[in-house]
View 1 (tube, rainbow, N blue to C red):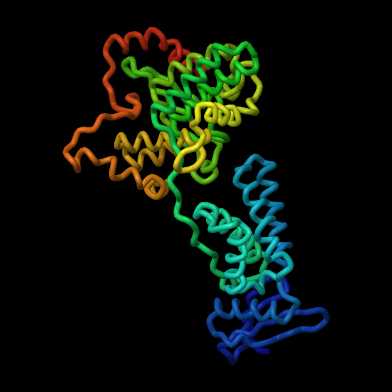
View 2 (cartoon, rainbow, N blue to C red):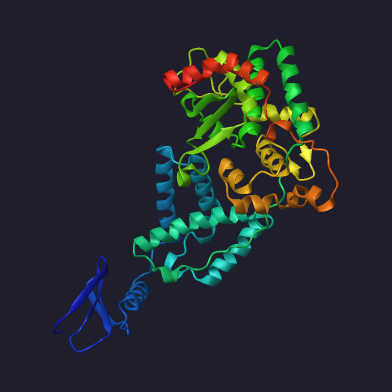
Length: 416
């Protein structure tokens, strides 16, 4: 062959040039047969692509889609076992099993063309019973990308063989939230029930729920993983000239795998709830979770209890869907937007993007500036605690007296 320049693409397949030719040739072995052929390309990257395409065309083809997808599922299960994004990874596993493997399972991954992917999108809509939301489409595409990335790394396909994914989907619908009056109605009902019940377990659940919902509307944090993983050592406290300043480190949740720990500001009036929580756990340790029942056990029915209360108060349904604990987060964002909070700061506080807030809460934009646009002064019915206020010196002195020990304890041992 003369002088050769040789580049291995994958195990068993390489390309090479001959001394008197500018074009690349490819070589591999199939069984006992050695196969050498011209790629017809002088550009090395194009030659690699052609070599791989011909390699799989001349062999039996790439792995079945299900085999590659199952390898990805194993990766996701390992990630869950190590404590990484268990909720997201569980969703990805479900999507692969119920949609992608169900449709593409036996088809070889290198044979899936754009027409197949388009047919899959149509089938998926039929299976789902309608158009998926954009966020659902994004989840589907994210896990499908993992399958194709693995196939590329294994040499099953090249990046040029990956068909385009469906990026359509329903525009994000307006989300159900509470008015401030509705939230106070819920809070007052819980407080009344807590004082009325004689059942110890029910009382513990209600007192936790009372502080839990206040915490959501004091932070905008996501109910579930974000809040339930807050430890005492995550809460920072200080008095700034008599004004409580509370922050919480969010270490686990929907976005922390990508963004890392984020610091969330807690509305100052939550200090009263914090006092109650501290009183319930006198023997707390830094690494203990904050939102537990007073006997130290994890709440199993918090969300269901909240849902039952909404039904009792006839607040479960709204024009924009049923309300849940998560609706409190939407309420927090809604109230702050109506009080003209800086959207970039609000997005950072809530661990989301400016684009998401703009897309989901765009219906609020006209009302945010209605006073300036109309010249009419409207009465604000949102929580007064969301506005910037200057507390009186009497309030400052009372805070120093009542909460000074919080600050001393935090400075002394690192948690309140």
